[in-house]
Length: 368
Image (cartoon, rainbow, N blue to C red; front, side):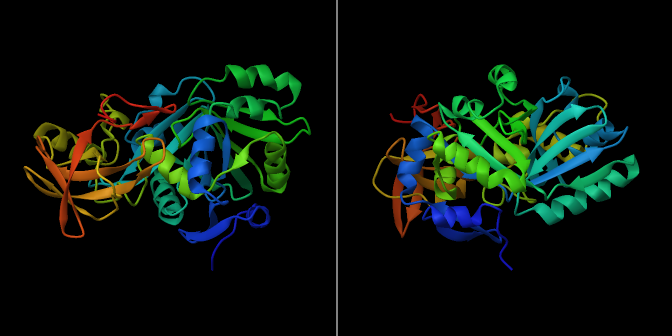
């Protein structure tokens, strides 16, 4: 049974092309994926991300539990509303999922986890939470809309009740607050996103989602589908779970070392494996690739390096750069002259640092 978000009929009425995405009937585009991509980079676009899973954790030992569950340290979260990006690992150091955790108060933290991993995530979190007496509640009654782009925040702030607008304007990056629309609808407003642009991810009761979406439309925010979301996040150097990492890949092998906190006195799940890998250097690394020749880099293509073969993880044509870009997992060490096997032809590519694009601008070295 394909699942539908509460906005499904609205997407169809807007002429969206719908596809199956991890068991959900979701819009891939509303006409032109490229135009939607540029709309987000230049102005503001909105995405239905109601398939994402909101999980609330409550209990006196919630912080202690999350210090054990997550590879990043929730001790960094000191102010209510502050958020942290992290991986949740198995005992082998492999990534069960990547997620965002919000600190609400000492007995209440909120997680937002991926849609495709919902069942295994909930089972794992509940299994680990039992020893800490933490209550785990999924919140299926919520919808979620991401509004992204240079003018996204101003457009959302215009829909808030007047007394909440100043607080929304002052909200720092990777932080959230509880606010209301002019009509009194409660919103959980987070200054986070998956596009490399500024904006908000907004959690709200499902029964108000269509009105909120239509109010954004009236404010000049254009709808964007999963196609544009994928090209935007890859340009922004952001991993996609299942394609760039999974339970066989550690954060170090997915270029996510920055999300691992090996702080003293914290025995999180998978820590021993990560410490050993950090000490030995690990056998694999993730790199960014740009192809200057015509063509597209696609998932699964073979990558040839000085140290042996690797493969393309996420690959796409970048609308902002006008070139093909990709993540690849390759053997550790200096890769030398790198080539990709495209239908039997070895095509040269350049190894570059990512993000490829930051706030609409190509990063140094990407267009050389």
